[in-house]
Amino acid sequence: MTRCGFAAIVGAPNAGKSTLLNRMTGARLSIVSPKAQTTRFRVLGVLVRGESEILLVDTPGIFRPRRRLDRAMVAAAWGGARDADIAVLVVDARGGATEAVRSIATQLTGSGRVCWLVLNKIDLLAPAKLLPLTAELTALGSFAETFMISATTGDGVDRLVAALAAAMPEGPFLYPPDDLTDLPDRLLAAELVREQIFLQIHEEVPYATTVETESWRELRDGSVRIEVTVYVSRPGHKAILIGERGARIRSIGARARAGLATELDRPVHLFLNVKERAGWDEEAARLRAIGLDDPG
Image (tube, rainbow, N blue to C red):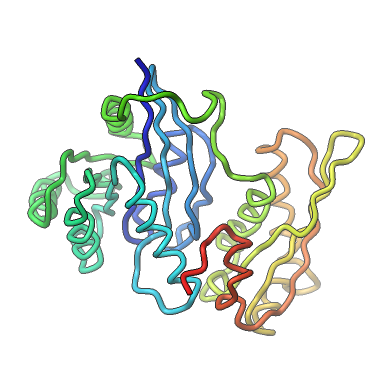
């Protein structure tokens, strides 16, 4: 008897959702940075444990949206939770029961969906504070299960995976067991470039940037030639991204290229182009290009 189902990983920005997905699957499927709101669209991770296939859905952080892009990200997160068999609410234990966490927990547990609570980053919090925080959060709604983990160290993650495997509904596998994700390689290339922008550029520039793969060409020697465009909202952002004599964009390209070569297991020729495009975060076409539905 096989089991297969969807588990949506939801929560406020910077709760560690993408780190948890990567830890559970053992692969870098979602980009990660110390900055909030790094994830912009749903990322599927396929995890097989025994006779169970767990389809993990990493979602954007839920926050109060302002731009069309923000609304699309939040809609993707709630859509992932709505479509899942289990909604896994990940909470940064250090931050505790913030107003944002309270709002998400209340809406999630009130939706009728099976909800689990996961307190993450417990390695950064005094143990004496965990039980009061758990009690405070469970009082907000009905959670079927509660887990305390550290996605960074892996503490408690195996127990969470085992419980998810046992809780999946009976049914056939939906993906071949050796698949890790349904993320297209073109989107992976754009995401690894965007990850480096988040890691190497500070303040508001990464949030005003989007990345699209314009060209993907397979070469005879087995390598691949990829052309990627980085769109920015303002002329000043373009100058920051390029850096003095092109130093910053070369660094971004070099590290993204190395990551891509590892992920694709072959040589990569990566070419970056930076363009100014004011208002890209209000364009339906730009949202579709990065895997988001237009919220209207």
